[in-house]
Image (cartoon, rainbow, N blue to C red; front, side):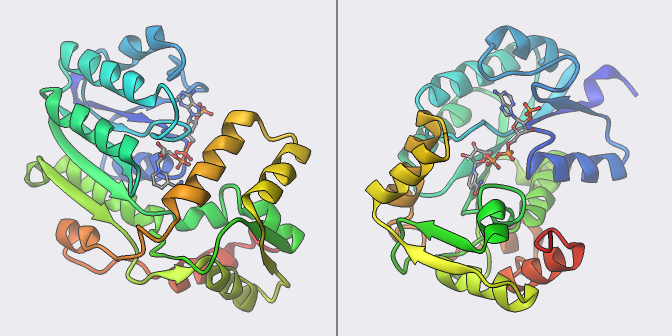
Length: 275
Ligand SMILES: NC(=O)c1ccc[n+]([C@@H]2O[C@H](COP(=O)([O-])OP(=O)(O)OC[C@H]3O[C@@H](n4cnc5c(N)ncnc54)[C@H](OP(=O)(O)O)[C@@H]3O)[C@@H](O)[C@H]2O)c1
């Protein structure tokens, strides 16, 4: 197998990237991890690390960190796409976000870069409840968010990875924008209730003001830029604009997306919410 058969997975140890890596490895597709802990290291903050990771690869799955909406993300993505095309990358599969104007700009940059592209425009991940910022509050038994009864069609990272791998291995997905959501929208309160019911844990869900949320994050020593991001996500993006489900999983894979209930049952069985 030549070097050019290698697929770069940027964020290959993250929530979707790790799942993409597992699937590609099962298919025997050679991969290169793109993350700060990989060798060679890939760091969005250090553009000089990008080309050594891109060289010799034909395609890439691209996840930006921490979020496509943060200042500097668009510039970084635009110049990453250009460098990828310069070194011969032919196909880019990009993880985008729903309801973020910055994500739309990044998608436009991708479409204009000259590579074959597929966009995965995703709703809020189920895995935020088990592999990210909601895990600790769940284990502590109290979640406080500046959110009203807004509903969200949480999408499972396993579905995202299935679509990403389909896009990386089948030309039919080239030029497609897939809006990926779960099969139904539920409120955050209902989502925590579902986890509490299945696990038998007591989880209090409180609605607090944005100011109180900021104060709590400051007290927890969360960095300022992360606080701004959380307030943007919960205050602006989660204003109800993303409540509709979309048919991206069905269009890409010909099957229904996984329901939040199924996700909760699967994760509960692993014991992640037990400790
Ligand atoms: N989470 C959601 O609900 C959601 C929904 C829609 C869209 N998105 C989009 O998905 C993308 C990823 O978000 P996520 O929350 O799911 O994160 P994630 O993929 O779980 O992020 C962690 C990954 O990023 C890598 N990473 C961290 N800092 C990095 C840096 N400076 N340079 C290169 N790699 C770095 C980590 O590896 P190392 O630590 O080894 O570097 C790890 O592989 C974002 O662009 C976001 O806008 C997320």
